[in-house]
Length: 336
Image (cartoon, rainbow, N blue to C red; front, top):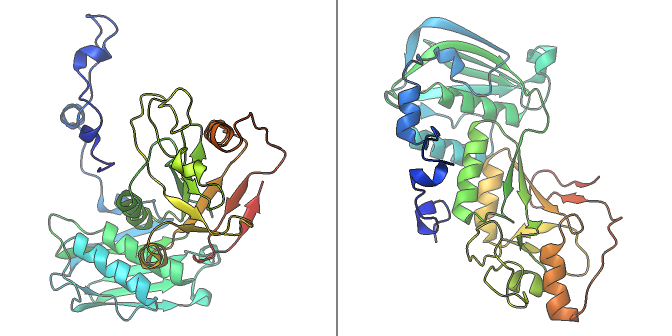
């Protein structure tokens, strides 16, 4: 099942179902109606195309010809990062392994004090070429994403001449994906990662457990995912969990804990090469979430009815734990 194709498991909503009474003026919004309502909007200046808005952007007259493509191979980036950049370039319609070189240097001392943080950079696009000065490799990567933001996908042959000065305002710039209540496929998560990298977001928060489902496979407690990750109509909830909030029947296991006895890290239940390729290429970190006591239905229903056949209780004084996988760049465990 394609989790991003709602038509596979959700029937179309008839406009009449959205009205409280026949005279209700509520309108079902569609891409067409939104376009019609926003026809009076004008085209934004090119300096507004970089997201998030940089600290400073100065636009000059003229363009840089990139019709022969861009060459990022001289940048001081890892092979994984360069591979991700090449993939993004092709996606935007730029010629791969192009002739216009992009030069860069990691030199914190050359930057203003306000830019001397992870992710800080200066980008200069002139009629002579492209030069990046970054605080670190993350800043170099973000500068390239800013270059991509300036590409007109309808005419990916020129870049405006600009000088960009930027640095992250917040250390934590994240997106939470709730796969406990609404499961998304592996490919959808990877697409999310690609978009996060493009907009300089650096934390992916996976919400793995909740009343509606348990996505964390623990070898010592197989019932949690054998039953807690499935939904069907079973009043006893001995074979699955009852659907909630109109959810469908979907049995998926997304994440596996590395050890049943000692939870020290989390590894995704998918090929090591694939998950490493996605995270190591980008500047994102994975933050799986384990919240046993805040939302207990999936846990209590599964284990009480199958393993012990009696009600269970948990010591909810245990702090909520956020685990950073050892496989990725940051290896920290946060309890709060």
